[in-house]
Length: 300
Image (cartoon, rainbow, N blue to C red; front, side, top):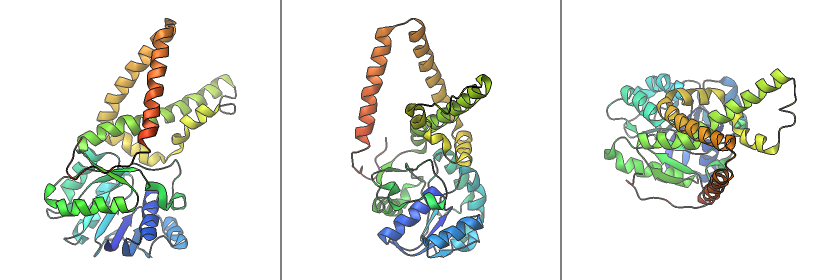
């Protein structure tokens, strides 16, 4: 699909994209840049890129596609450094989880003719680093593209095709809708998981009990995502704060209602709640198994 692709940031997502590109033979030359020399050495050892480049400006020269795969807090510095080294037909994209913030930062920095198309593959594990990546990470996962300029329709379609080639289903959304959806489906669950692990640790310290040692499988499964990259989640919490705080208010309200039902020993209310959420959970699992690609231009 491309002569040259540059991936900036070779953590779990970046290294998985690199592996998928190599597996599907989507470019002739794949360049990897990361600020960490140890990460670049690992990339070289794993042979998941054709070339490593320590200089971010040089890494994007003559690239047809540049994908930023770093924490949100790094975007400003990266884009400032590469904006004048992007050729006119290069697609600049990313994998960030807070699109309003991303658009605000990048749009202010890029040159007027830069082909900027934000994207977000909804995939990952609690692991991090280039060794954690794998080529099939994106298989049957959604990638949300949030176009900022419909004049770039041919490039948007090409980026759509790229994500589908590495296994994704593709959806188009506005940045605002994306951030609202991600707040409840991804950001809040992670924050709750981080918080409940902290609560358990504090409880264990205060009571000198073995809360963590004897944690049941439900606790382990629920808190698995609390071992995700802390830098990435710090940046998400800060840069999608409006939607996260709104969803936390709704969550706290629902939690208060649940607490009230327990205090009142309201069997019917509890049974209805647990039955309803069980059906929703089953629907979520089923939806994750469906494969469909919406038409270009559709927004939800």
